[in-house]
Image 1 (tube, rainbow, N blue to C red):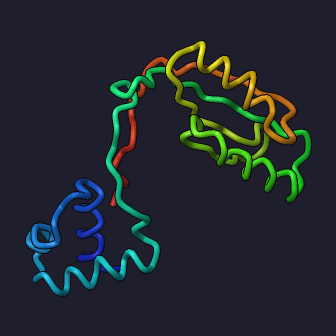
Image 2: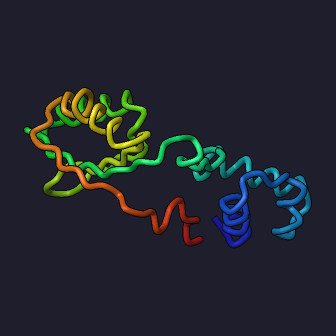
Image 3: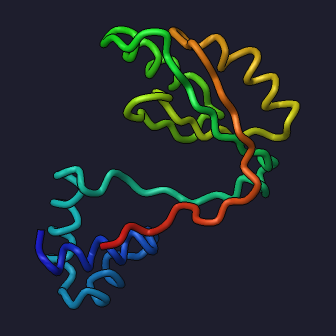
Length: 150
């Protein structure tokens, strides 16, 4: 990956709706080489995809919580089962496996506190191999979907 690829990535990361023509202009390439580079970045897995950033509050999803999960056992099968079950809970918008205790950090978004409580009681406590859940409510998002430091 060279300086031009990094310029392409920075431009697309800031605005994924750029046309190839506009992108080529911004990074100082003609259309064909720019297109080849973008395609190569996509095929190599550097560019994972394109999407619109949505405002959860505007969609009626104004409640956010962080849930720390400690598993009963940390075996390959227990981890696989737990992570597979996370995929079925749409309100979990981010999940990270951590070193030590707790084992996972989940970012959860719901309509309101009542919806979170229902999700917690009916889904999160039923996830496989869960020993303990600890939740904290998000007061305010200070940094959200920051552009990567390219």
